[in-house]
Length: 492
Image (spheres, rainbow, N blue to C red):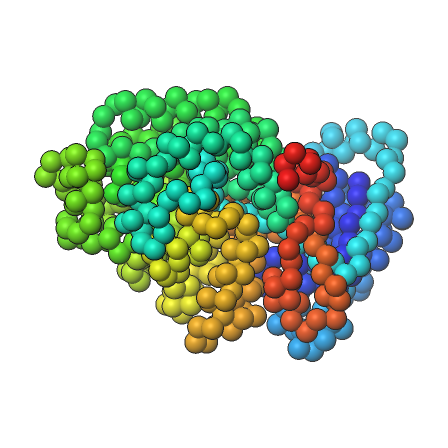
């Protein structure tokens, strides 16, 4: 059993609770308790059995009158000073699905008590390890091969030069993985078109949702066969931290019959509702093609793909209808309308934004401030990713959030502090929910995936969320599954 604490703990619950001098108790791969460090330490010294208690019983011991189900002071209370922030346990609910069963508890009691490891880090922030919900590792070797400035020019350059970039994949994979770890990322939604990144990710410390992506503008059986072969190889590598999933590339690149076949396949392979990734309305040209059957994509199909008399594979509504009965994670959405937003949210899907990629390829970011005003559910359905080095300057999620911060914070009615909070939740709580992961929040029963960052004098800040995001550069300690991740020298 271990206790780790820091000057500030960002719980990353919906209210963005912050604990001054907070801590987390964890054992093996799961979090057992979250609260004030000194009180958790006292309970450990008195041999409190965290694993056997419900949160209500545990929290009741911290002080008379504390209601385990009550809401806890959040970042909104920073104007009143740290004295108003809760000094008690934050476990407002206890998910019994994660509790040790009775037989296991009895067995554990008979074992000799292990020594308890305790560490407190001053001038630091402890928060859930980040979730990079959308990243392409396969084009990690790109520097100047692909064109920026417009989505159309970029896609044409990818079609022309992707082979040379893919040849260098093996030489950059370790560095790409290290980039994620160094910026505090514990989980990734990795989109893989070819499978060349599979083994490296399966054996990495990262928690990986591995999306085997299908492409094919015809319903030819060979496209499905190639996809299935890659998926089956990924399924053989499946583990607690490597989860094979399915991705439909986009409405302009996957035939409807092929997409339906792949989604049916994913449903058969999954014991729960499948999570399917897709690129959606990444450009105005894509929207024009789907709605008007004209524009740049018509020439692309005829001249590049050599398809005579090309027609769109879907209407926009038909593409969204594909995902009824599954959970979709739709990436980019910069050309999305309010109508499509409503359909996405009504269906319980998630949206992933990749701000720098959208800026480089299409000239604008997803209008988060606008859609947040249109529908309050939007902010709770938003994840963030870096996309790949094919369409970004790097895949550092901290830099991605900072770029988004400067783009979002100046919007009318959407200040920097509110933007920073939204982005951190997108990179933790909501990113985890989008990928169906049991992390992203410091809460009893969740995976012990968390990151520690050194930020001088952060405890004295009146705007700690904003100061964290503007100052965090490299993780001081990263835990995944309750274990410290060491970045090997050859990865740097």
